[in-house]
Length: 408
Ligand SMILES: [Zn+2]
Image (tube, rainbow, N blue to C red):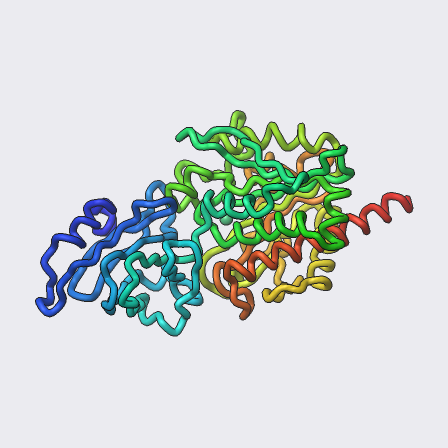
């Protein structure tokens, strides 16, 4: 076990505060902590202006890279943070100067040998750093508040978590009747994968938009969004990926499932879709680096009819996209390629389970790179715009499906 695992975050925070600096030239008055929603850090060592730290793995059995910490009292200082190469993405760390409300990438050029240096603005008293741009329940609530008076929008509680938190479900549906199609979008089966949440928010906003696609979708589609399929993990700042004994996206073959969110969705989705043609997308972020992961890619289903439908949806997305992330169908992962080889029956994966429902047109996983999608910057704005583009693609896909069905 790595030595940093022996320090709890709280103790590390105290050490940061009370330990005498190795270099007498630096008065060490700053603190580092993760005691806020989504927080995750283990501080290993502080020597002068250099802090060595890394992700708290908690119950993940494969080392993962999620971390999110706050530095206070460092105004005017220049500090170096050593996180290790495997824990920093293509555009370096994300930095927030407003307590986590807005984020920017520091940039890949700021990282050398797994470390970055940050010059704290003199008046910055709460600076947050993270491997990505954390998205929490408060972010979802802020999004929904912007549409509070929209009669199509409903916030519901899917179930309670083990820690008694509400698991939110967002519905966008015509209050006057049942729509022809059902579209379900899930996120955060792996709770650390926060960049996908901005795409999910963009899908919500696309479905609510006062534009031709939004109007068509609200007239024809009943949307169900489950933004936090590991709600406790997202708020507590867990890795979630490869959680022991298995994570939330490996829980769908269980009878009953291990996690309350999964058990509730397995019950709710068939009831809610009620036999209507169903589209199901499960949004993820992939690994942090390497070529295959630095793209937006859909995972092709094994079933040939669904693979053909995915191709139609992706053709519409490639053709109609307007946002700054340039999606390319060629980046999709064909079944049998790379890591897209899962064939267990029944499938423990959410998308595999959704495909097993008799009314499912298409169920698949979508991977959205953390920071760099084939050269395009992934950030809160561009990921939201990708979500809006996917919403528009839904309209084109479903219109085509309808025309095919009518023509039969
Ligand atoms: Zn994932």
